[in-house]
Image 1 (cartoon, rainbow, N blue to C red):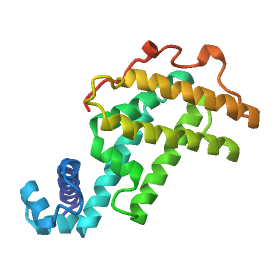
Image 2 (image 1 turned 120 degrees about the vertical axis):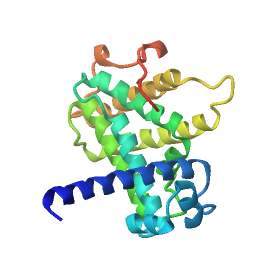
Image 3 (image 1 turned 90 degrees about the vertical axis):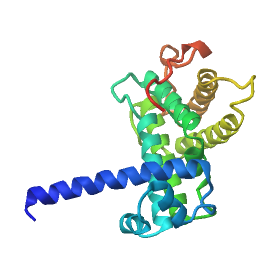
Image 4 (image 1 turned 180 degrees about the vertical axis):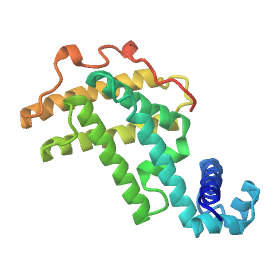
Length: 229
């Protein structure tokens, strides 16, 4: 096989692997990890079970690949638009985060709760996405990703509250009085603004954005992220 043929085979393998991950995301969105066996997964995917083993080695390997793909999707949606002004980037980061949770309930729950039991690898993936989101918020608020420990702790505390709030929100989206994404985003950024003010008190080297740059002056200020779920 020449180099061109090898590249073609590799490209097809990558496409096939991505297709299997996309199928798995849909399967695990509706069914718990323990309720699906490899035979079930192969049947839903319309492939031989050996093909899944070929790409992912095991059911757990397949699940971890799905979680990693979901995390990459969440981080990409939340951390996009890097060329926007800082305050607008914070606005879009939070709306992108909520947009993802709104349209990918099961994947979001897996990411923030650590997946299957206390799986160390899934927990490591969760921690990595938390670090990336904190760094993204810091870059939007301060123009840089590095933080003194006290500021990082404050933003981690805010993000933990965001996770709990978002889990509660997606669990009750069918309720008629549940706030929409724009209104919840406004609430979360107001809370972030308060957190940034407290950070400035404890870490003067991290000044809160001036009032003219504060996002979400009103709940209606939010320009929701658009695009496919």
